[in-house]
Image (cartoon, rainbow, N blue to C red; front, top):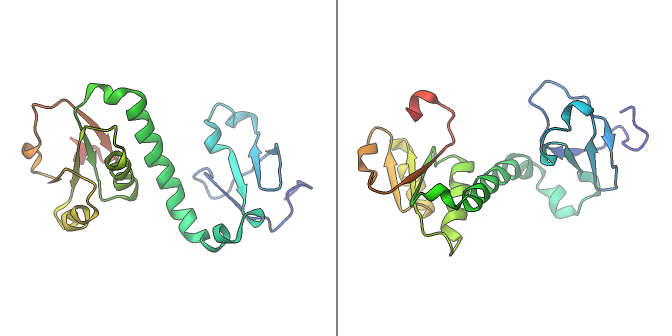
Length: 172
């Protein structure tokens, strides 16, 4: 570190750029967090420029560092998708189709929709045959559909599709 307020050995948690290294310009530095104020990153949502200083956090968070690094970003993504659907009244959809629902982000979204008493939309999870039992065991979908059996989806209901795979062939 070349920043006097961020010593060598400080541990940061956040949405780092997908790269082999990152050069951050720390600003708005507090004991528990800092913000990357590099000019070229200012157009990004704040979520992508804020970093938690984990050594200043409670012990229970430090004790689950591995789980946090793996699961918190995925949960945040699930929440952002959930919030987007809610804010846009599901774009008029009566069912939400979640591709790759067996992914952590996919079943996180399904679970949030399921637990919200205001959500009346059907939750349809799409997954591979190998993941059907896992998804059904989660209890967060009204219907689980295996890829290739999409004809089982009720096409009379307007649908919003949320793709978790990023696989154009699979989505098509």
